[in-house]
Image (cartoon, rainbow, N blue to C red; front, side):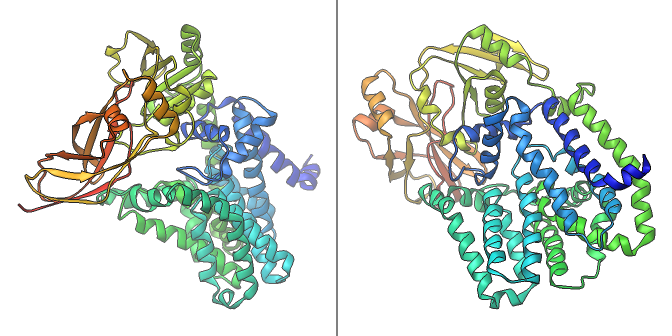
Length: 555
């Protein structure tokens, strides 16, 4: 038996890794973002509000051949297994059993490795990029140039964090800036990435503007930094992170390739450490760094027997924790709200609502994650209407609202459920729902205006532009009884401080061509922004404009 294991350890390790992940795929409920990305796959495109399209493509491939949770996760699981395999190929000198111990010590690779999120393809293409880059350093053939350009493009299509990886690799080796073939690889990557850039251009660079200037901008809190550091130790652990991160930093690099690994690991850590100064940083944002951390730690631990012994001693505890958490993910035995909401709150009741109503169309108020999970588990199209005091998401762009216009739907929410005639108890909360015979929402109608300045206590008067898609124009002209209110919200930072209902409604904009307004906001001197909203049948003002800058000066 021992001889058989010694001979076939590689096959046993990777087959076991994949099979355990497959079991987890089948029996673990979809997480919120996974369901959202599953809806991505219904509307394949070159770009999305939140991310590039790689995860949508991977999910789409899985759903062609399979059904249920395994369909969403099968391709990410294959890539997760391949990530471990490619990372092992990058280690030298070879010590497979030490590498297995490191891989098994990084719990996130096991617990989250099967989850259909953009970090999974990002990590796979990170490992593949380093493999191709090492090959290029050994032989700068045109074949390796093509591979560099192709894999770099795949990195960018996975997640925007790939830009940091490419930057740190270039930073680690100044000679690359004098290498014409590197520019050729970059040109190829840019050419392959052009469809996504064109999509961004068509949508006014919406993803870049959101991630760079709108997302996660908050006043600094000290716990942002401490939580980040602890999160990174847990990401590469939860126990071995206290060994692997320091080991990767302490290893003395011996060549350009190893230096690129170290620049990437340290670069990601420091970049997001500094990012805590402007807001909360999620631990998984540094996920590409796990690949170089594993490789460098493997090299360091081969040289340091005492550290290696501690890793091996702590490995059984890590494995026990991982097994326990795998069990909790599948079986509803821990009643903590965070666990129930993430893994056990959605099976059964969406199908029950669908049976009760017989409806094919649903609307979940202001929560794209709940709408996506309800869609997945009920099998019926579900729309998320976003309030104008919240951020947009891809439901603002997909042709979902358009398809519901004027049609019978059931509207659902978990807040103020006492106003709903019908409710259903779920493992986590009560959901209220009611019937709307002809649903109206107009988030696709957009308002715009130039930046506005005014003095305190003065009326605010400015011109507006309105874009009414043809379908909405026709609908409003043929349904003159539909005349929702329009509001103008005023924001200080990320928080809406007040809103004013305008003296005209949507039919006035469409039929009377009103293109100017005056309101009295009564704001203190300062910088604000405004946003338009149109009332919907969900009893919410939808998100109908970009930010419009407003400056109030002293009277």
